[in-house]
Image: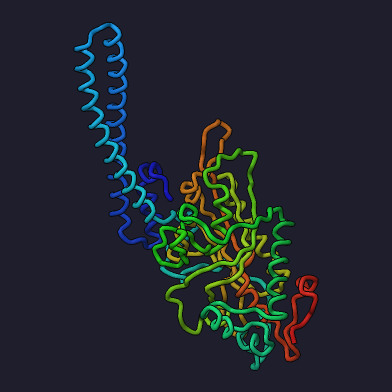
Length: 424
């Protein structure tokens, strides 16, 4: 969530940033924010003045009673009664302005970093890096959903029977490969200095609001109404919320965590051939990395996250590219996002497998996550997160790019985790 003071002092910068995102009605909503904030501040001043006057009168009433001047005391008591009514009215008005301002701020996305280009969609994203050799599989190459059926390692129909479309069942070597990837990713992350955590798979509303998933405008989160809990769309939500309301010290930076969780997304409106198989699921596994950083170091940290994900993909020997997302494709809470995509040779298309993002103070403002700077003043920290990695499309890429006439080869780095070198 943007800070009101920043909007007030840098209105043109905010509008320019929102224009990169093609955010409709930016000028209207910013004016509404400034108006609501002005009324809130004016009402707060009036309320503070009345409360101060009331406190002063209370002391005078005590003095009059003590000196026996009962009539003067009663006159002031009547006035304090009037002030009490006025303060009650102002308090209600203040609460209304605070709620209005909060609701308006919840609608405004983060301001993109200066390096982010304006754009409308993924077609306007910039490729900034690519690496790896796309294998020549020949004309008989199969997409992963056919390979899964051929070798009986993922059963989409069984998942549909148990739950519905988008909830696959992993079997035999498919299940072991899935577990191997999770353990490999966690080991890589912990060796890089991330502390492993296990977190709940459901969160409360406050947690969803703090990281920007709520208010959920697009209905993508699964909600349990009876308990008012939400199934997590990513481990970013519970891990980042571990630090909600915290005041940390500069010496604590960087704070780094990694965790494996299943992720749940309704993916409303997702249809068509491009979502077949593992390409888009309602439940999938992911290993996440989260960082809490000093503002001066957050972009260096983001570059470090990108380098870390590169290293994983190099070891898996998968062809991949990195995109810097344009304003129109950058997520609501992010200031800058790099997407990693691997090439699915059998599908002849790029598949997103990771995003690494810097949210700057946007999440921290909602989280009330601050640190004491060298001057002893409180500042908002910066939050970052990345997938290292999301499993479904990595698994799809391995199945498709490592397929041979004899079976599916396992990347060398995973063999110690799987205990086998081929799926046949």
